[in-house]
Image 1 (tube, each protein chain N blue to C red):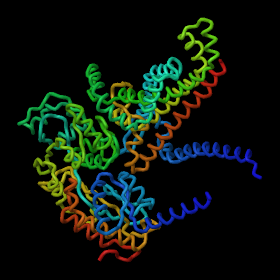
Image 2: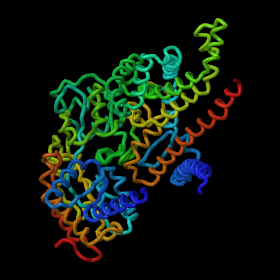
Image 3: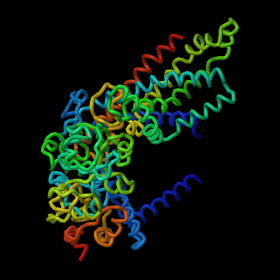
Image 4: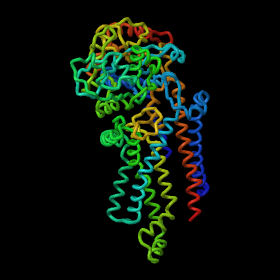
Length: 345
Length: 291
């Protein structure tokens, strides 16, 4: 009796897992684009009946899973360095899917506070400790800045947001580059750590005079006060979806591995970045279960995400790809193949 | 005909061996995966107070100190409460309606998800700590080692209490009645009969709650401030081993970063192991023999 029961259960289980294994694509990685991806994949399922299972376990985890060949694609906020690419046994493509930005948020009763790159670096290095510091007053003449201590709040968990922010600081401040550097977690000179965007904004909201950084999507959805930042051309830019897409309007390399923080575009918001989906150029290399049909499915999905899927970015406060980024993505997608068979025409 | 007695014995034996094997394999996995860090830093890993993932300089000292500080302080705070609660439920108001109410509420504390404790700590406890920090002219952050210890002490009270009350209930009634018949007061019975008899069990309860405090992650990470600096000032923010692992593991890409986090896990494993080991062989055993 029990034997029969167990047998039938295992048969049912086998049937189901096999059914899913054939129709379902799996990806894992970055948490930042997760709300967008789940919306996109949901719409894709409704239109084409193809299921995509994406686990937002963090970029690091996604990259590890792609390397150990347990997923079909990985999501990552940062592009892989040459060194990291060498650890893979085949070529990896970086397909951009959307743009995000990191914004400065603070707890002061002042709207639209202006920041220069130097001020931001000095605050996070612990060199500026009061809100009425000369440097801050100089660019905010019209505001009444209080004599209050600045409490720095940053992410305690490793995150792509931290990578983008420290990448920006490394570009605008020599001292930052030498002392702290860029990474998903860094050795912060000062400050408190909050877990996730909600942790950082929770601490900022609670501590008078606190300053922190969060993703733009999170700041917009929660109506947090955001800082206006001076970009490379000297213009003060408010973080908006448009100014972020503009930040990517620079000369882009064909493999799209570029950091667009501190952008050269004169109307671009300086702390913006691409987020990517990473795939093997030869999709057969992804894992043992990969078939031609499934590889075609992955290629179709990526094409859809960089084209029709882009319309879901703005409602969720993500910035859509610019024209040049889409063109570069197209070029790369057309190179995707399955053991030599090109997947997209 | 199957010899049920033998089969039964075997099943129990296998179960035990599996658990010990599991423990060993966890240890071996942690050890093997942290080898690159052990080779690179050696013993210095334990006394280095820098944690720098960018320049790959890793040290565990701030986290070891943070873990030990939070768990010891929380234990100290929780002991008077859990001890008096155990006595209240297990002796003074034993099997009454009011003690049933107390028991239910304490059990509810044990099942509240730790993230809720964290939120409560962040929004209710932190402002109180902030006013305390202002008195000592420290940065008014609200989150600190002390905030984390307070949250932990509330979280671990149910563990010590539920074991404490059970062992207090187990004290033989004739022993107590004999003492009463000699004219002993309630207090004297508690002090001279119940405590010596139930001591090892009560102590085991404290140990269990101490273990819980060492490993707690979510609630701690929300209220400790997560700064990776070495500090002994409990009103400043710090970090614990469990909390840094939870924070950085998902995005640790570089090999050395990952293996350092795993070695931290190994250290946490060893700390709990050593504490339990010593407790069992030197404290609990000896006290039983004394009786």
